[in-house]
Length: 77
Ligand SMILES: [Zn+2]
Image 1 (tube, rainbow, N blue to C red):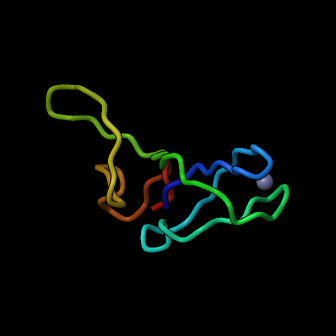
Image 2 (image 1 turned 120 degrees about the vertical axis):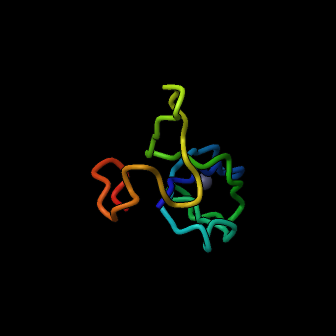
């Protein structure tokens, strides 16, 4: 699952939430002030894959070359 970074407009806290893609758009309460006035900043993918040209890129959509077999030590898929 990807990590989503949220920013709290109430107290200015920035925090990350690990959740599924299907729940990505749901609001995340701030862990500091419990306000729902938060905005999702971006998703962080811990999973990196290498392209055929040797370039490294992050993979969205819940999988990478290492995940294909169902056990990627990097991202835990
Ligand atoms: Zn807050």
